[in-house]
Image (cartoon, rainbow, N blue to C red):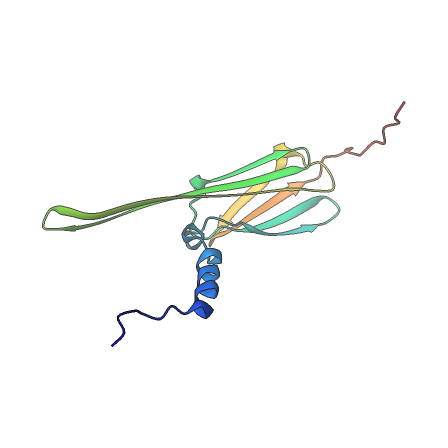
Length: 138
């Protein structure tokens, strides 16, 4: 009888790649990636961002000219105890951010944000009189 176990190379690399590229654990908790939709009308931009499981107080939105940044942070702690002894205690912090530029500058004082059912909706009014300028190089 042979004491050696056969090593199957054909399965090794696909399994290694599958484990390497699988979804990160924090992704399932609502962080890791913020997916957005952006629409434009004459007066404003409308942004819809998916932020499932993230609380209102854990979302930050910043506007600087035509640059919009959305960032989130989630925290969770899980403890398993038996008879007063802690057997397992896990904590997790997940962060995600997304920045994008728009065609025109945004009037930051008039931005409206609403969170409903894990969807962040932003109304970003275009700044009046904002225009680009071509600079001549001397």
